[in-house]
Structure formats: C-alpha cells, structure tokens
Amino acid sequence: MKKITNTVKAWISSNYYGPDDVARDGDSAVSKLTYTEGDMTGVNGWCHIGSAEIIVTLFDQGVIIEKKVDSLRKELIKHRAHSHAHELQMEAKIQKLLAVTYTPESFA
Image (cartoon, rainbow, N blue to C red):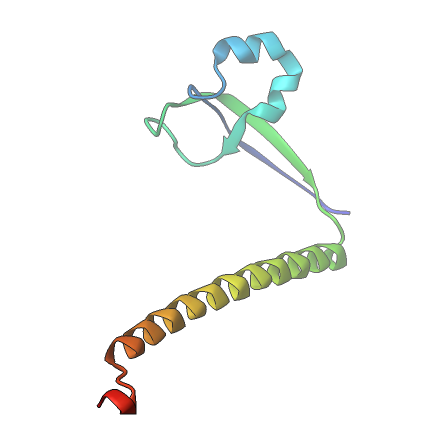
C-alpha cells in the first residue's frame, strides 16, 4: 500500500464546534475538524485554527477502482430514479393539457 502525505490547514466552524470544544476534547477533536488547503476565512463562521500533517494510506489500485465503480453505480441508480420521476411529472403535464383540449365525438 502506498502512503501520501501533505500539510493542510485545520478549520472549525463556530456554528458547530468552537475553541472550547477543541480544548475540552483534546486528541478526539481531530475527527471533528475540517482539513483543506483552501482558504475558508470569512465563510460562514469558519476559523483557521492551525495546520495538520495528513498521512493517507491508500488501498491497492484494484480496491480503489472497485469502490469507485460501486459509488458510480449507486449514483447512476439515483440519477435513473430522479430522471424517471421527472419523466412521470412531464407526462402528467402533457396528459393534463390533452385532457383540457379533448372533446368527445358525441359532444362535437
């Protein structure tokens, strides 16, 4: 397995987790912070509190591909369901319009 390493900024959001929470939680606070190289200063209460050395141990390429394919298949299922629901809504609108203009022969 391959390891990749980078140093990124550590952030907290004043909306959910504050400096007192970090001090209280100690090492367990690591899982409650957000990490990014981007600058979130001034965005919805985000506060840059330090930096983090991130070490990622990557799965083997075959496992990564398998997980990505699985994720894409799940996304495809959701997309198909959403698309089908949208098709049904459009068909209902069409039928409603056709019903408004339909005149049976016996009344014509």
